[in-house]
Length: 419
Image (cartoon, rainbow, N blue to C red; front, side, top):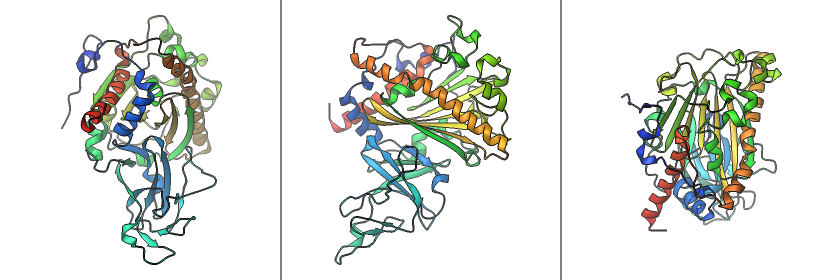
């Protein structure tokens, strides 16, 4: 069933979501250790969290570990001999020693991956099958059925692997994602498997970095190298064509122009030489019919980018023939780990491989321009000199993220009767 999403009236988006308010907001939810403790319990231990894609755990015996500091956990994802993908806490039931281990983690955020027929604890010798059953102990008398690995709820949507640490999740994954996100079904994620990864450890609350990708108000000032002068003139702004909210999730769409039509001054020489860069390769393989009603629900023409922000901590940015994925993993009330992944169609020529690598590098530099501001922003907020900050209509999604976070925390407090 089609959904009639709100459209702007007289240039105003906030009037369509009156519960968000229009006044200044506080960022104390990004500076308070007490709020962060509640956030961990209310959100990161109860929401569905994306850890990886199915291609990373494709065959029986494939496994991947993922640290989730905000949930006090490291998850062990395993593809069983029966083809089923399962998730467990990465801890032996004897003394809690990590089962999957490595002296040299290979992943961008310290994860471990590989292929095992079973998992053996190097401390005590207990052995577990791929489905989590305890199948061997060095001493007799242990009831194997009582000491299987501790499971974590796991589900897959469109090839994205999610987990939920709640004992009884309140919603299925599909219910949690809602119609705005699930309208992306039909996008050829499974065909875009050439991936480039990087990670940055930032001295800021996770929401402070997420805010930077929810609005484009800052683009003319911070990213002046890549932004033409007609956008940078005083009061010109950088407006987006469509904002959308569905439950705790958010969407922003921009119009777009062909990168190669810009003056040389607003791209690096390597972009012109390789025909690739900030908006990816200038030409991408035909992926067939894309689900444009889901990708561009506002009907923006010419369509440029759609950024789907799935609560609490991931973003998927679509550029048509390729996409970006960001994850923000809190590590304390004022630090987080930022993961970035670019996904392309597998290169068919050397030139295409170079185009992909150039795009990944230029995009990394662009994102690090934002990341470079975070430590200073966090420090200034923690001075607590200013109580409230104004947001304009183009920053509606910033307003929504902080409200959604507060709503989840308040719901948890009400449920548990805690202050």
